[in-house]
Length: 114
Length: 112
Image (cartoon, rainbow over all chains, first blue to last red; front, side, top):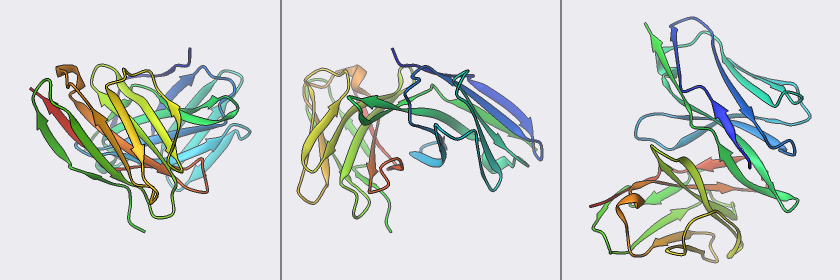
């Protein structure tokens, strides 16, 4: 069935770049997403990429998509302590040809050390 | 624009009771989805409503139900609560740009 996998933890130093990786299984996914969740909060949509794109850049965020390998990554440049959170990768499951629900990974906990 | 709002934010119930959670989508958004988040299972899709019709449903027992009103506000109901229903319940809305999905802060349900 559909599955999204991510590593569970990542620790970086403030000012370094962070790279969070994700693999997915549904080759018909149209959109892939990155969400951020801070403690006690809901999910914040960070960015998304359409499946016919290879890369998308949005300020400090760069998303890379390798559709052949079904691999998605999120790079955060100049990581700050405020970036410490859990980052979720998600694919939009195609349900009967229409855009269905999101399938989420378990989340990567990013810890940023000063 | 105001974001997705959910009420209540926190709820404590006992086993066997029922609970109703409410979600108001972003103004103009007609699609509302519900997700359950637990430490063990992660984020799992419950159901999606569009124009008062359930369009899609996840793999949850019939104790979980929902509905959507003509103003797009949605409620979900869990009957005969079990300890395992303790979770953060997240609501999300989509508008015309249907690929952009925005989440509310969630309702933290604790079943004792």
